[in-house]
Length: 639
Image (tube, rainbow, N blue to C red):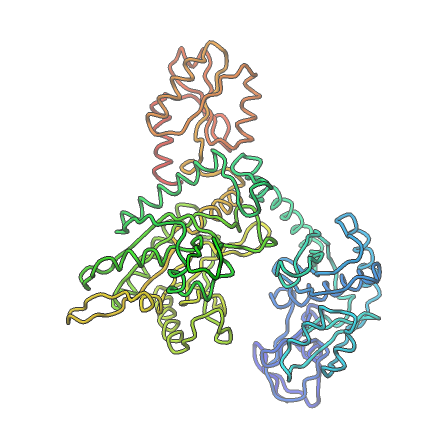
């Protein structure tokens, strides 16, 4: 056989395993090997190779290696759970980017205090070094093997008729799984169970709530320790915790899930960001609109949202009534209605609409999380109506705006780009026009390539009316969400009969670009809180300067300085409480105020302010004029 490897080829006279091939390269590679690939398909190390093919050796350094390693750890977790809780029923247990989890239906409640004894049982299973063996069963036998597990039976029944149904066995434990896995449980070196949460079966709030146990695993103890250290840091940065501690937002059970209350500090930050974005959009030729928060169902039926998005919409009134209204999940049909109020020539295009819109989406209760996933949110929404010839330039303009805002927010290096395409098998989710989809997706791919944007492709993530470029970011816990989007729409102009008169006097349907410049303000704020651990840059801080009185004698001087700062456009407050200055400073530090000015008798006498900068401490005395210039320069530069 001729085996094609990463750096050449090797000949073998008889069938060999993936592990044998690794050994033939080097003993070190064989020790590090976790699995392999045969012609691009991942498989176990003990898989026999008996013909010419391309073989790759997978180690923990590869993302696929980490996934296989951690998926095996999830099976060890499941086996340990059943050893301790034999009445529990297993659901699913995949690997994820940061580790693994298993969703389990427990008959008795399990809490984080129980993780230690589960870990101890996992350690015994790893020490036993059970061989992990794969086998395949026909559908009838597979259902019989899983007859006591309603979750596995549901998964089996959904598989295509010709699907291969595979299982993995380690000791007495058997689980249905596509694999691949490590060759034995003893290959796992370091692991840790992290948390216990609730999770609906298949993410559907209408299904049963299961218990999800999260864990992680590494092949080196030092890497595990480093990850756990980062995890502790992440907990401190979690916006859901930090945002409440800093009085940025709160929630109340009487108001409801996914409906955060922005407190004065949080509301001010959003106002700062909104003014900044709206001013920048105006400079780039956008026309401001303000449209209603609800509309009759007819509008959504025209746009297609009624057919493709109704489950995510809040309805007002009887759904079967002609008078039923719905809270808007987006602004596009409203801005299209504005466009249609006038007749447009090709010379009028492009028309760029922008709106800071309050939107409503019926997210599942299990998906709610702080400011990241909510039911009412504020979107920097916008739509560009243009000719085909203008499409690429306008798309590039949207990308340029995104880059500018990402740079000002300081998060450009923290995001990635995803080219989101339709799923041709999902007829209910998408407009069923394969030819139009392929044309639009080819068009977008060419534009992205021309702009030299590095992206990954994701099938099934497009909007129902067209493909999109998603700007993706991860929160401190590693979960990925979409921050901003730019979408090409090939359908709604025709649905709304939107036209322009071309140079020949003919009516033509325009192209439409849907875009959000800073995305959902609440979600972006959540990321900024986590990015800066609450210490937001000066230009976007709700309170930029706090002026502290050293004694009661300087109280009036403090108030005068605050007044001067405010007149200069600097957001400042006074702290003239009868408290020790050390206490006042510590409190301002905990609130992450960028600057403190300390005013005592000596400062009054010298007509200066003593300045403390966040992260720097005491930086000396200066005139109020010089201090104002320093702060305003920093604000202007968007540092």
